[in-house]
Amino acid sequence: MGKFLTFLMSVAGCTVLCSVATGSESTDGHLNLLNLREGDDRPNIVLILADDLGFSDIAPYGSEINTPSLSALAEAGVSFTNYHTAANCAPARAMLLTGVDAHLAGVPNIPEMLAPEQRYDAHYQGVLGSNVVTVATLLEEAGYHTYMAGKWHLGSGPGLLPSQRGFERTVALADSGADNWEQRPYIPLYDKANWYADGEPYQLPGDFYSSRFLVDKTVDFIDSNLHDDAPFFAYLPFQAVHIPVQAPQEFIDSYRGIYDVGWNAVREKRRTQAIALGIIPADVGMVGMATTGDWHALDAERQRYEAKRMAVYAGMVEAMDHHIGRLMAFLKSRDQFENTLFIFTSDNGAEGAGPADPDNPIMQRQLSTLNYKSDYDTLGLKGSYNTISPSFASAAVSPLAYYKFYAGEGGMRVPLIVAGASLPRQGVLSDAFSFVTDITPTILSLAGVEPPQGRHGGKPVETVIGRDLSPVIRGDAERIYGEHDAVGYELAGNAALFRGDYKIVYNRGPLGDDRWRLFNIKTDPGETNDLSNDLPEQLQNMLAAYERYVVDNHVLPMPVGYDHIKQLAINMMRKQLTEPLLIAILTLLILLPFYVAYRMKPRQ
Image (cartoon, rainbow, N blue to C red):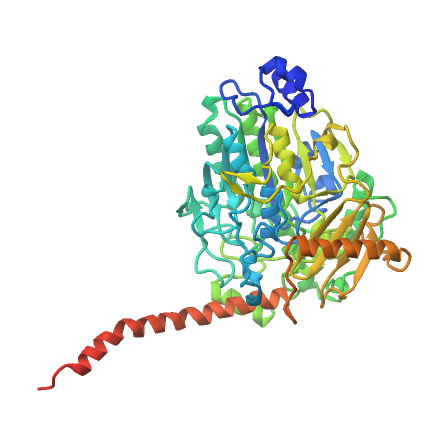
């Protein structure tokens, strides 16, 4: 413990003391830890990523969902209440693991939703580029064991799997999502659920449930190398709570009756609890979303079904938390818990694309294609397909506006907990603005590793733009971004720029209004008071900064009429129509020489 505290002091800049302890200091005044192998006391780091988890979906942020493991982590570190990510999974993961803007990293959108007009540009392929270095690569080079178990979604071609991007041991889902009970796809875009282990195609076990399995693999990876005393970095990107929303029955049963009050009541209750916890200001307002339905207009049977959809969602969150607790217990049993730092967050806000009416013909046709059921009794269990509706998604992000894919706070603001038994501050909140690109430089700082300075492995690479959150974690600073520092963001035409306490935001129709708006998101995280008319100069200055962001990051304009849900549907239909056509063409090409030979054969 004493050596680890000394290491933490080195992170704080106490290099003189550390150089006495280790006899190693670099010429730029930073502790050089690259030569430490035996008896290494650098911290282990566990990066846990939930999928589509809303801002208020865990108890430390105001939820009614039982998450004791995450509550324990919140009590053992710093919970960030003004942390932002990309509003979609692959762009968020690219920035999370590299510290580089998603456009420059090659992932401006998920590949499943990319418009064909944009795919002519090399950086609009939706896969992680070779011009960026992952945090896993840098930690592995510095002597860390590096492990990953979970969803990757950054490419599966040559050089793209996590086993080729710095992870020593892996079991990875390459797709945007998949079933949680068995190896099957969740949308017709995929022929199968594409899992890989250490770079090779992988067959899931028969007793698979995603959250349990991923923690089991993480435990196995960690346990396999504990004998050599080297620190480890474990990346654990869960499938929870991505579509299809599924959970074991015992977790679902805990929430029977909880959601019978409807989505508006849950949204308000979470707002009240978040205020009591200090997560949001006391006078935070909430806007009503156009996609939120009237609970009281539903008949009793439909209310019962909607409440069950949300109960399965809550059960899936609690199941994830339960298995995080298993990982924590394992580390304690191996005397590794005290020397482990945990980072927990979500890739984006709650999914709002689930159908308001799951009985609609389009949804039922998709379920039939994939051989899924959606009946009430088995909802969430093996063979069933479940989502929450846009109405309950608004409760999952309470008290924020919008949800996944959009640039409103509900799509971008998510929980972030940085915890560890040896951190100097325990159980505190920080409202410092932070962004997903800050995670990589923070991990590197906590590990005593320098980020690449424009070159790596003998070639130029993109520079890390994120900032180290360690000063806030230690309590040495209240914020890491100054009032004039700008952070830009764009995803398929939905856009934002953050500066100080302010944010300008543009949400495309039909849910958005195709207008730039200005909010003070520190005092008004619910985005209820548009300041565009009150602060026109502030708006114009931030718009100019956003235009610079567009140029610097090579952001492409959106095709006329683009809609992300329609584009996904079009891409699925193209695949379904194209593959049989390709098979027919190939068959004809194979048979053609035989037909020609037959026709040319001399007749008797």
